Length: 86
Ligand SMILES: [Zn+2]
Image (cartoon, rainbow, N blue to C red; front, side, top):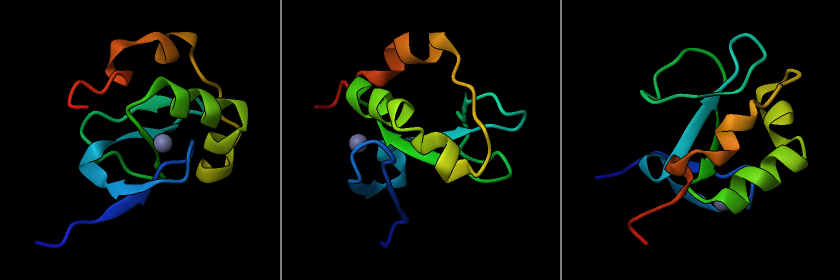
């Protein structure tokens, strides 16, 4: 079974899409895409706070999504970032 891989915009690691979290910014506000099916460009990170924070700090979300992206504070503090499988 071949699986699409995506690149984490925080650390640059390539991983199967299901291991990563997809983000979209339909109105310029970064939103976690639970379904991974929202239209438009998506940016991916690992489920690790370090990757999310690094992507935010380097404006990688804005670069990848090709728009000015605002990041809600609550996104970076939610527990989804902790990968319980590892
Ligand atoms: Zn990463």
